[in-house]
Picture 1: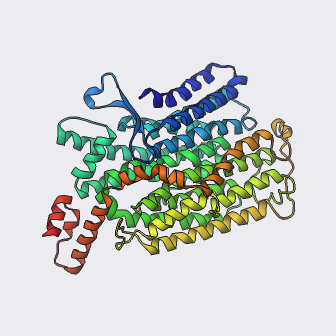
Picture 2: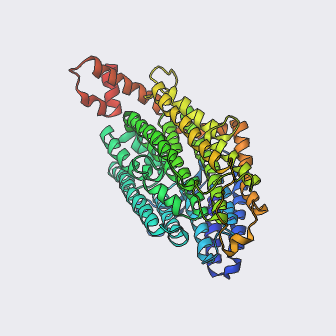
Picture 3: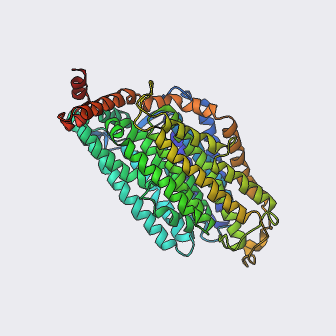
Length: 549
């Protein structure tokens, strides 16, 4: 069965090689055909996937890596329902990115489209990897194509943007690797053999590592995954990278690449480190809320539309992390939905900004206004996707945000089924971020879409002259599928929540008992000052015996 998911990697990689040797004039058509074929193939796999809703993994298999079997390293592939949903998001967006670049990119075409296909293969590899080393190779390789996409085809500040992007994310990834290798090393000490199987290491870390060991590993993994999300205060590379990147790279970065960080938190941090997560979830939630409000306030004072949307990603993904650390199915379902919804709506907003930039070569809101008079079709899509991003009921953004906030709200000690360590105040303060988001996004729409017509002279370039004032059929074709999905998810989220339910319950299986023990230990420490605070960081079995006694 490993052959089927392996083709998801092989097809875009083979396409990248073909693009590299094909004539330049054919590069975009080859890339479009390969990325579209990959999407169709991923839909076919989804239709025959047998584990929607039950939490199991499908298409599992492994290929030994010659010479590395003794170290427990294999090319292991497999996907559960959450992985499949993110694979579908990735393969859907890539042909749209290729089609959206037809008039925007006019030089070094083979390199550009080759890197797009290469990064697609790497991102899919992250979502279907079941071996730690293979996961990390794919996770880290995504930096290379994105670096060149920004460095070669970016705007004037591209050199600083790509350098900062690479240094931040590469450094964080190395620290995360150290944490993951520490788990594998402890496994080797305990069992006398190396293994990098994610399932085996997950069980080992959750049951055998002490609370203090889990805390240090949590810190290491947060260093890598929080940079990728990004969480405040590790977010400063993102607005610069978004602003300077070409349109397709901005879409890939916002819609998929940032989700590698949240997926890492979901796949590794939550199931591997339950004691540490319970102990530090309130602190992580506070950092997420600070990021929600801080980035929203920065959005308020932006004049560059693209930079505003970039900072909005920092704010929005704070909700995603908050939902994860609510430690209950509502919050985690909201978080996974948020990964998908943010990819659709924010990706579409970056497409729309790119379409404006192609025509006017500016993103300055002081130089653009009333564009609904000149570009009514563009204005329709702009208003639609802004309302989706704001969280208008009936559109996809509302469902994810609402579930994240409800998950945080109900994550209190008196929850009978899934007790938590957050509560109503966390949700209430985070909810202010929704109000801020509505204000800065609707203010932006009021300036750019409505009001008196304000526009600079159209860019005097050959490809800009060929573009009509409003959107072309190709550009509408890029945006329409995203709009349909935003509407469908907003009206019918249940198929998605049902599909991911089993996987999420499997990830959260240890948490109800773990939270109860943590709360009991905290209550005992608070009621008896003489109790040694070291009780909180004992082994789970030792602490349970002390509480029961």
